[in-house]
Structures are given as structure tokens and as C-alpha cells.
Image (spheres, helix red, strand yellow):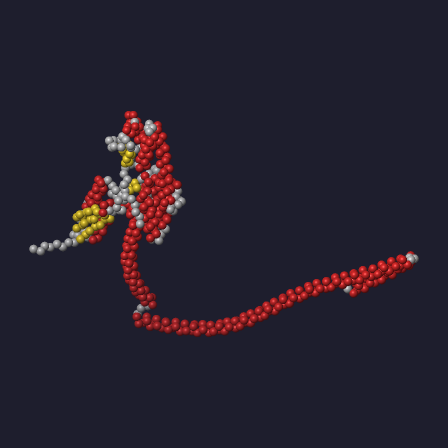
Length: 512
């Protein structure tokens, strides 16, 4: 910085001298010299200002340079401290590693000495064992293999005896517990479901306000009643019964269509063949819609979702089907509720059981009705409409047509029997009911050794009394099985029939 100042001063002196020389050569007057002096003074002031600015700039650059150097020095010192700390840590770890290495060497030496000691003792034990085995062989006269065989056989016999005893105890306890638990579950399930009694039949009574309407229904030369019967497939009986017309037919859907169509015709007053065909067609469509709506409402009431629309339609069709007087839809709802309760009691899935219970008789209401048992047909329908395998198996197995593969299947079978066998659930014509009971008794009487037979519990149980001198206990079991098989093969009956063979010995004496 001092060199720069000196250079500027020298340049200023030379400039002033040069200007003075030039002016003297040019011969300027005093006024000019004065101007030159003033210029020199101004130049001197400018020179001083520039020198001051240069010094300030120099000081500023110097302070920035010193600040930068200080920052670098601080960073260097921090890095040096970190390096020293790392060196200290590494040296400590090296010391610790060397110490552990020494400890490992000591432990290794100890283990080596212990292993040598163990090997030595093992050799001594082997020698002693061999000596003892030789002594035992010499004393018993048996080889080692023979002794092992005898020991194994004795242990097997002892284990088999204990196992059989344990199994028998478990079986006895399980039977007692299972019977008690099964009775509890069935009784609780039945108590929690209340259903109506069977009142269905094969005729429908259509009430009218007065008997004059009968003539209009019959029509001229019977053309109206013939058209109505042809359109509905139902026999219409117009007799002397006051204010009533009887609709007779085996198909409840057709009877319902005939009843609704007749009601609309009587209300409208226009009764002629063309009108009859039109009203029957509209009524048939309305009943189909009612069937679908009934199926949807049933599924919603039971909390069952995701059913195929065709299955929903078949469920609604159950409303117009009955079995031994028991309404099929009511029976299916009852089985669904029973199955859900029983599945909950047994710790199974109640929704799955309820779904299978509702669909178990779906094979009774198909449109084409092929020559298949309704359980098999229902299983095929469920498989066709993508139901789960557990539900399909429960549907097909509820009458033992297929083998049960799931725990839901026996629940559906039991609940179906409960719903069909409860008092008032089903009814038969008296003549066919009495004939079935007589056939049961006569079938059992046809076997040798049978003395008496009694059909009791409304035909749900058959008691067979045999002579003790002609039939042994083993024969009694065989007879019970043969009678049950023959009943299954030759008779048609609702629910199931229990066959009880009674064999007793009586000793009779008279005191005179």
C-alpha cells in the first residue's frame, strides 16, 4: 500500500512540474501561473482523497482476509479435535479388543483342557459299560439284541394297556358329555323358535257376495268357466255351497292365479272369454313379481345377502308349495333360524348355517322338475349359481343322498328333522296316516321271532317285542338294523322313524 501511495505522489509531482515547464515554455503570465497553482492544490487534495480511499479499501480487504483466515483456522481446529477424539476412541477399542482376545485365549485353553478331560472320562465310561454288558450277558444268557426286544415288547404291552384304559375313560366321558350337550343345544334351539301349525290343503275357497255371480261366472252354456279353467289349469267347482266357489288343484301357484283373476273379474263385472284370458295373463305376471318380491323380502328378513336372482325367485316360489300340509317357505325359514342358533351354540358360522338352511329344500320348486331327489337337485342348483361348497354339501346331504363333508351338513339335517317332526308341523289325510302305521307294524311282524309291534309317537317310533327264547341279544341288534333298512327301501314317510327292539326274559310262577 505504501508503494502505491509513493507512485501516486511521484506521478503528481511529475505532472505538476511538467505542467509548469510547459506553461513557462509557452510564456504564460501570472494569471496562468495562479491557475496552475490552484490546479496543483486541487490535485493535491484529490491525491489525498484517493490515498484515503485506497487505505480504507485496503483495511476492508485486510479485515475480510483475516476473517476468512480465522474461519478456516476454526474449522481446522474442529477437524483436529474430531481426529484426536477418533484416535482416542480407536485406541480404546484396540485396547479392549486386545484384552478380550487375551480372555478368549484363556477360555480356549480352559475348554481344551476340559474337553481332554471329558474325552478321557468318556473312554473310561465306555470301558465300564462294556464290562457291565458283558457281565449281564454272561449272567442272563441273552444277547443285547434279545434283551432290547424283550424290553421293547414289555413296554409296548404296558403302553397299550394304559392307552386302552385311557381311551375307554375318554370315550365314556365324551359320550356322557356329548349326550348332555346335544340335548341342551337341541332343546334350547327348539325353545327359541316358535312357528305356526300346518293348515294348507289342496283347495281354495273363493267367497262371493251373492249367488247371482255364480251364473255370470259359469256364462252362457258354461263358456266362461271353461275359459277360466283352460287359462288357469284349475278346476272351478260351482255347487250349492252358499256364497262360495271352490278352486281345486294340486299347484298352489295356479290356485292363487285363479283366485286373484276371479276376484278381479268379479270386481270389474266384465266376464267373457277374451277378458278372462287377458286378466289371467296380467295376474300371472303379477304373481311372478310377487314371487320375486317374497324371495327378496325373505332374504332381507334373514340377513342373507348376495343370492343369485334365480335362487331368490325359487325361494319366493316356496311360498306356494307345501309338504304334508307344511308350507315350504315357512319350513325353510324355520330351518334357517334353527340352524343359525345351533351353529352359534357350537361355535360355528351362523350366517353360513342360516344360508344353507334357507336353501336346503330349493330342489322342491324347480321349473322343469327332473327325475332326481330334491336334495341332489337342490345341490346342483346351488352349484350352478355359485354357492360355496359347504352350502352345496349341506343341501345335498340333508337326506343322506351324498356324504357329509362339513360340520354344517349334520346341523341342517337335524334342524330339518326338528322342523318337520315337531307336533303340528305336518299333517296327512287320516286314511293314509292310519295305513302307514299299519304297514309299519305288519312289516316288522313279518320277521321270525317277533311277537308284537307297536307304532307309537305318531309313527315316529316302532317298538318291536321279540321272544327271548328265539332271538338272542346279537340277533336283536341285527333285527333292528334289517327292519330300518326295509322301511327305508319300501316305505315313504316324513322325518325319521326310530326302531326299538325289546327282548326280555320273564320268570313266572304261581303260589297255590
